[in-house]
Amino acid sequence: MKNQPDRGVCNYGAGVIGRFAAALRQEVGGVRLGQDIEAIHRMRVASRRLRSALPLFENCYAQKYRLLWRKEIRQVTRALGVARDTDVQIDRLERCLVDIPDPHFRPGIRRLILRLSQKRAKLQVNVVQALDDLEKSQALDSLEARTAAIYVEPQPGEPYSSSLYTLAKLAILDSLDRFMSYETYITNPDAVAELHAMRIASKQLRYTLEIFGPIYANGLKSALSTVKSAQEMLGDIHDSDVWKAYLPQFLDKERQRIVRFYGAPGPINLLVPGITYFQENRLQFRERVYRDYLEAWNNWKTNAIWETLVETIDLPTRLVQQQVFYPAIPQLEPQAPVEENDPSSTD
Image 1: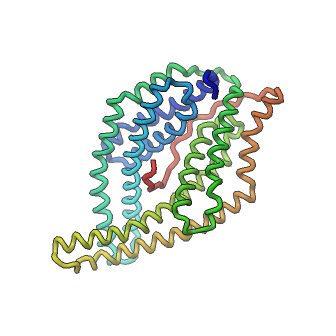
Image 2: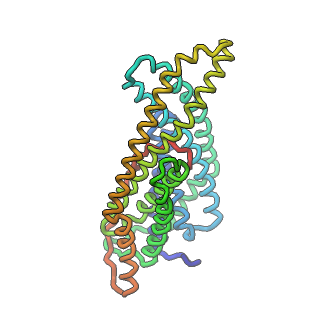
Image 3: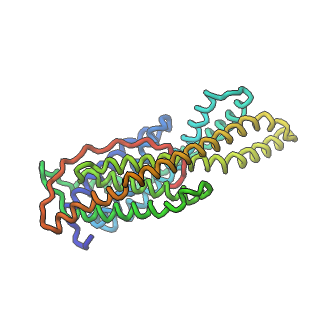
């Protein structure tokens, strides 16, 4: 973007940012209570969407505001992320406990739930503190006020600006390139760090597609659906990798606690079967999801999903260059937060 922001770009950006800010604010009360794990999930998603949108339309706002907003929202995202990750882990264990095949596995699973629940209670203090800091900074208040001052309800049939299509194309291509840069690691099941990075890149691509989807005739629905599937499968793979690293450390710490309390490690034998069972369960799950991801990726390549996306976002800019008027596309309704099974603490 040039130094002088395009009015069409800023108006569209204000509409997007306004919706995300409202979605974040709506969950504050429920997150403070800490009783509904979905409230923290929705607020986390809203904060991530907001953080994705702000850099795209930053020239529409004064720098003094932008720095404050990004700092405060980033802190909230981080606090929410660690708490949400723990919620997801507890939920996974509780569902495992329901279907457990051997009662001897229960003590180990219950001990895991106990320790993670204790951790989650402590994390709630950090979550509330982050919300308090956000309120004291008035970052969300000023963001909503400045956004409301920019936004003008568009007239029915009003065309989107050529600058908006150019911005959308550049932003989507940048996110897509970052996502595709990890393709070389897909066939290596041991590329834990790279597959985790690909998951993060898929998340950013998804948010970018959600931001700009409404300006395209088909809402970029096919590409968006594909990226969501990629994110979910990569999230499940990363979830399993987290458990693989965490469970041996957990067992070692529990052994040390038992020795300090009882003077001998004997009682740890009650916990080992359940923890070992759950660890094997997660390893087998990872293998299945990894195979599914390989198969899905090959199908996406065969169906030219990414090439079609590039062609779709390129068309409006080519029509503008050819001085062909691109018809206005009705604004779609804001999309509801998509369920994420995302145990990563990456904000």
